[in-house]
Length: 416
Image 1 (cartoon, rainbow, N blue to C red):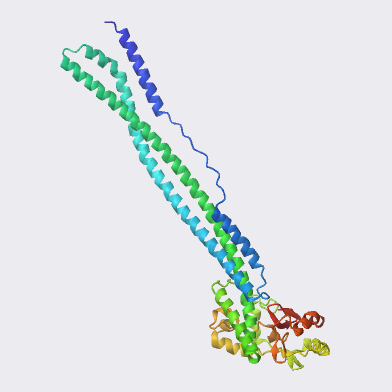
Image 2 (tube, rainbow, N blue to C red; image 1 turned 30 degrees about the vertical axis):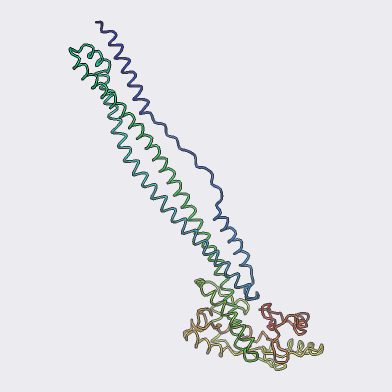
């Protein structure tokens, strides 16, 4: 029998096996591009909260009514809590995505080792095919000396072919798993990077929300300094009004007490934007020169204007009385009783941190003799529709006095 056909068959077999090996070993790495993500409903809610907080921060905490100020505090607090939740979620997502990436990388290492082992087996089969092509087994079977030997060789050939095919299938499956695991790792790393960026932005947004909240809280604390001190004096003439003012401001104090005091930040007082240092200096401040006009004691500097105002009002049938200056030493005694006796507790600690909430001495224009709480017939002016208020609204500015909108009875040189 000629050897040429056998050589041709051998060459053909080697080529076929080599082609199979090459096709199995060839790798094509396809990374699907990340799909664009639409803005989430959560982010939309965050934007709404941020806009509401921006509007709330514009409320005048010194002049707004109690409901407006309380609502603004609530809105700002909700924005801070929402930003805190977003930061917590973003940090959790960073941890989850990072853990997933690490798990995918461990799986890649394991599958890569398996692929290497299967590739080595395929190469070994290819070499074996070259040395002993399957066709030679067929020729030998034809030359078998017995039917039993022929059946044995046929079974061995089928076993070998099946084993080769199983290994190739395993290799294909392993390579697919490896592709999937690498894509999973890429996606997880990308997700972790995105979550880290979102966490950084969430932290920045949280810092902004807290700064906005603390700035407004400082205004509320300044309001408390003025109105809580007023409540005690109002109660001497009108117990019901004094109690109502005290209760309203106590509710604000409870709300603002949840807001941390800004470290080193200014504490804008009702008395013209005083700092904590200036408020604390009241313990060494001399009593201002005073004068009593129509039974109302005020700073001598505003005495002439007050005299003209009272006379003009009386000429129009409006007979005003009230009180002006009050001694800060009374407030010092009250602060010591409710807050403590250290310099910080007396002059700097926010009113909402005392029990009950108590105004800081020196924070009110009354203590400088620059404010008057007007009354008519022994009752403080509470209604803006009353003749006394309407007269003051139309004429007080001519005499250098302006109203604090949240208190119809309160008029001062600055409107604070």
